[in-house]
Length: 162
Ligand SMILES: Cc1cc2nc3c(=O)[nH]c(=O)nc-3n(C[C@H](O)[C@H](O)[C@H](O)COP(=O)(O)O)c2cc1C
Image (cartoon, rainbow, N blue to C red):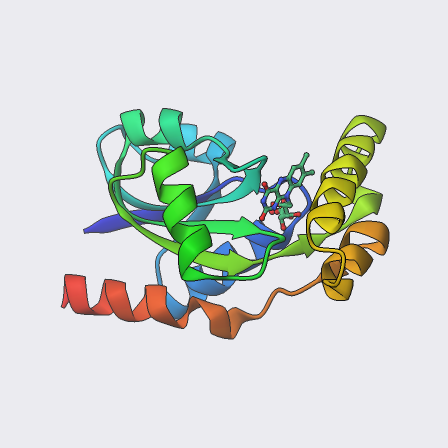
């Protein structure tokens, strides 16, 4: 039985997805730090986290501690099969991985992350000069959170758990 949805979120997008998922599946959700007290080791969980430079933040650690049934990765890039495959390979992910588009909120990032993200954005827009949406996103920020994106994960869990 899945005990919890555990999430890690820097600027709130992943938290929003986790809260919505919690409501839909009727499973409590906790941040990684709250889960330490609430959820015993080896319990079954769903893990949602954000992507930082292709790394699914916290995955390695959480994967050792709990039994992850499936994962949700939240990033700024648009969803694509290729990107999900790349994330799975880069992070050595063995479980089913779902991707949800988050957004960029510069107000919630410190100066260091703001600079880093602007650089990431510059590199991306240099690679894809015609992708106006991406360049705008990295310049001023944006929010693509949509609870409907959770549907494939919800269906996967409902099927798996009966
Ligand atoms: C330093 C940094 C690096 C990032 N690298 C990536 C990346 O490689 N791929 C991606 O899709 N999004 C990347 N992002 C965007 C975040 O994943 C996105 O803002 C996400 O919505 C953050 O989730 P949160 O609001 O729950 O913290 C990066 C963000 C920061 C601050």
